[in-house]
Image (cartoon, rainbow, N blue to C red):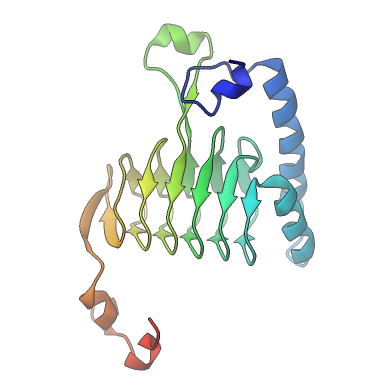
Length: 206
């Protein structure tokens, strides 16, 4: 198995392998171009994202600056995903984000990790585990999602949380490490912020 193949297997590998570095550098050049675009260049941004990402659906918006180890090469976004400023994608292996998910400023989705044994880190070994975010999720400002984590559909993660383990669908999770605070249900159909009521007319079709 080559070092490149090990990237997506969960095996320890050497990210400074010359073939890996050469391919990665091309991806980072495209990322640089994306981050130099102007707010008026929406079509150019969309075209660059189609080149950069493994998959990206219609209607996605990613506010520069975007940071990504591989410039999005191993990132799969559904449709109408919105990412605010300073999204960091440690995309050494695959990251999946479902339709209509929102990522607040300074969110980090990390797939790369390093062995605890110092001698292996000195040799530059790392390993990668995929991250999966469901559809219609909301990750608050500064949320960090660690390698190998899956988050279910419709789940909300509070600002500043560190997600170290899988989260189910339809819950609110907060903290470091993130824990499920409650299921999202009838109260959320009545109030949108503490005791601020939701106009019932807004709930048609919801």
